[in-house]
Amino acid sequence: MAASVSSSSHLNKTVRQHYMSLPQRDKCLVTYIWIDGTGEGLRNKTRTLDREPKGIADIPEWNFDGSSTSQSDRKDSDLYLIPVCMFRDPFTLDPNKLVLCEVLTCDRKPAAKNHRASCNQVMEKVKDYDLWFGMEQEYTLLGLDGRPFSWPSNGYPEAQGPYYCAVGANKSYGRDIMECHYKACLYAGVKIYGTNAEVMPSQWEFQVGTCQGIEIGDHLWVARFLLHRVCEDFGVVASLDPKPMAGDWNGAGCHTNVSTNQMREDNGLDYITEAIDKLSKRHPEHIRLYDPHEGRDNIRRLTGQHETANINTFTHGVAHRGSSIRIPRETFDQKKGYFEDRRPSANCDPYSVIEVIATTCLLDSEVKQESK
Image 1 (cartoon, rainbow, N blue to C red):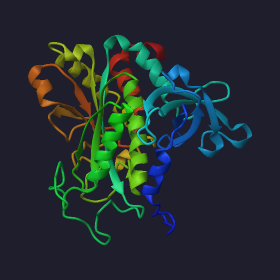
Image 2: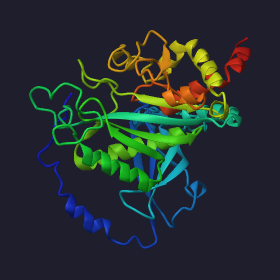
Image 3: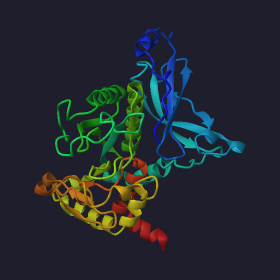
Image 4: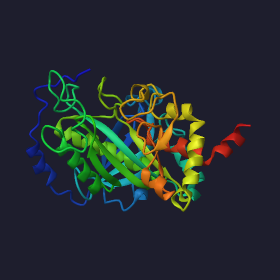
């Protein structure tokens, strides 16, 4: 449903700069960020600290009304915000901070959609494997009317082909937004690796990594927050819908690159092949966990077309972008490196993705023993 925009909603952004330049008198603004009850949405609120925190231990726990974020009912609505990762704030600048938080219930248990807690337990179990991740976040820029940014108001742009990694006003839509997001990530301390225009016009991708273990989830969620916040300033919307436009247009995924210390060593391809074999046997479980709606979003994207595999079939191949798992050409040639899981949707929870990958590839025998 398209948003209805009030004529009074357009602000003069130059006025803001006067207030942003005012001194803070040794105070520090800390913005707490958390994942809401949808498993996709991000919420945030800000408080004042008397001094700049030097680390996560200096940031106090806080609370919020979970009944307004689909995470509790009104009868017992207080939920705890537990700081887990701190970044610089690119919007209000130093010394101010952004803090990613886990959400706990009143009895200190993980709240609904807090997948970080269980993921962190798995990452602890597999820490000796030195598990590295990189995630490729695709997104689509939309106007407030719900149409892709810069698309004709009536009709469509030229067919896909000229837009991927393109340059030019008739091929590249939204570069200013992409570049501002990139700079915001670098300032904040997010491990952003790169970015590029994608196959569908108005669609972009940024990559986060290489990160070890739980860190990839923390940095990807904060990168998403920064993306939404930058888009807010431009008056556009960043959509993580896996198939924002029906028809002959590419969808949006979150391809996940994975390697262990054994995969990165000589003859590591043997360990990659072993991991792929394990992944093939648990394909339905991975599909269920690779989008927030148990595969119902991804089914629109994973059709076997537009550089995807079919959702019902597990496949793998070397340099094959139409497969479930791609072995990069360089990895195959060098017999070591990493593999790419191309199944996760753009709106996946990265914690759920890396948890099930680690469990399947590294704890499979342990899982079988526990189930007996």
